[in-house]
Length: 464
Image 1 (cartoon, rainbow, N blue to C red):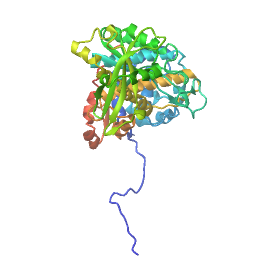
Image 2: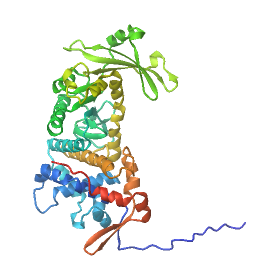
Image 3: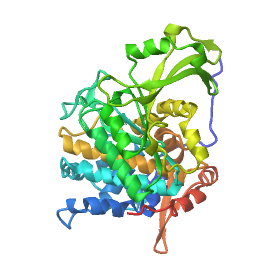
Image 4: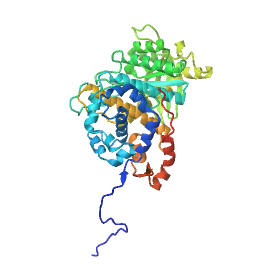
């Protein structure tokens, strides 16, 4: 039998070494330009400039730059990978560093270990500065913020301080996080056993956030806080009243609630429709035995989903508590009467409550961008790693909005962005005292690289 022979016209016959400066992370140049032009380095230098004890070392802003680029790169979650990047001339060039400016893994570890237990205070101030930056850019009339906890699974990691059993039956950390439009705008790094309503963390975070918004953005803007049943506590709800902000909170399904709803005549029930589902709802006043006041409650019951009807025992019933419509100060500064009437409607409150599912997507996005298992045994350096990851993620989200719009969907996860807009080859050449980054014609055309290059250099800077 005759043997088939398959021949390629462009067969590679040998290998060699080139002295050209090349890298496979060409999209990093856009991200580095963006970081520089939003002026994040001056903010970091203001809060952490005194960490540097000797003038011989690298400036703090350059170390942060390499950390942010390392998170965006996402090739490895191990700090030892900084040693590989240090000897990669192409990577150093694309992040606008010389070989001498590249950090080693030992330098990164010493840097993280230099942070104290209270470093979270400064990191949180930076997050809130970034939040105000985006508020001023988008200028919303109503600010919807979600508070939630995120479990970081460290079950398989070596023993770490603060790694404790969580409600998800794994050992890890459980930070409290505030979310606005897909961005984590504030956070408190905590051990795993710290439940949603642990101590005064929630009330203090609310006071800090509302104070910053009122002082640095707008004194009269309407603020609405979304909460799940883990935050069902009169202390938190009264704090919202005192601060003049609205809340939409998932209530506890106590026996008395079901009994009250069960005797309501059919005429009291109304319907709320979205594109796929019909919800029946009824309104009433809600107060636990130990509470001092009533709140507005909306009991919802799913009637059907698509063409599927639900029997009584299979219905995912919910009770929603809110002070919107019963606490006058919440909407006192609402822009127009029409907008005020819209916010008070039960349908709008139910719709906002249903958005809590989407509000949790940043947790998934953060874990896709970074990692859950933290590298150190001590709490303080792990806290610094966590907050660096949050700031990197925030800048990654704004980078998509400011630079990659039209090329990548705003909701794209980091893995998708890296494959399409980061991992392509470039050549860096020096001529006439300048460095020039060259891409293939295919990359220039498909990514509109010249447009992205221009956008990365003209973002709205952060105002300190």
